[in-house]
Length: 230
Image 1 (cartoon, rainbow, N blue to C red):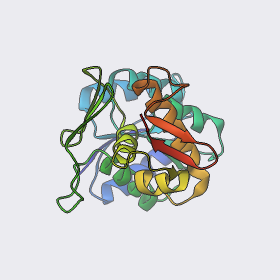
Image 2: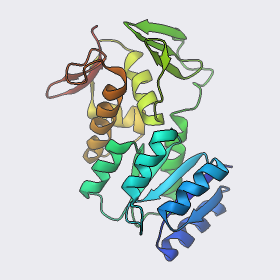
Image 3: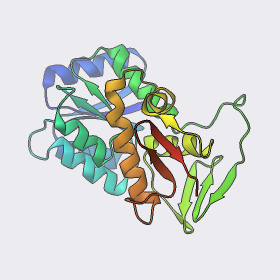
């Protein structure tokens, strides 16, 4: 059972999503405003947050930013428009994924599970990799799912951590955005490439001395991204 915090102002959507997820065994706390959502987050420690962008009072984007100031809890945006510029802004603010409304309970649950798998330990039959690796001043502990820069732990959102772990497992190998969508986000639709680009931007801001001249997550123009060479 997963503890889910749903922040959604539309009562019908709030009831529908809550019912669909409860039927699938999840524990749901549903609130209608950003202010109530921030209070619930502090009080109940959910395992994942579903966040509507169009909220009264504090906007969903501001809620996302405030959450990321203090927490790396997995966060999925709920949006009525898949091409909404606010989705991109939300991803850049720290959201791990997004769902376009209306969406079925199956779709929402699939996204929840995919995001949560990004912070889960590797399965026992996964290929063996060095648990502790160091690249320049960046130290990656795969067993503990921790990353440090210059000896200081970095607060990485689930998608940022999974992307870094995936790319650094194959240094100097280039992956297309489509490959990264399938491996990190478990998506297959190429239109979601903005998930990759927004995550790379956030990851560079945390890991690079100069994000405009990255040492770690590098762009291969016209194709995708690679880790290194350093």
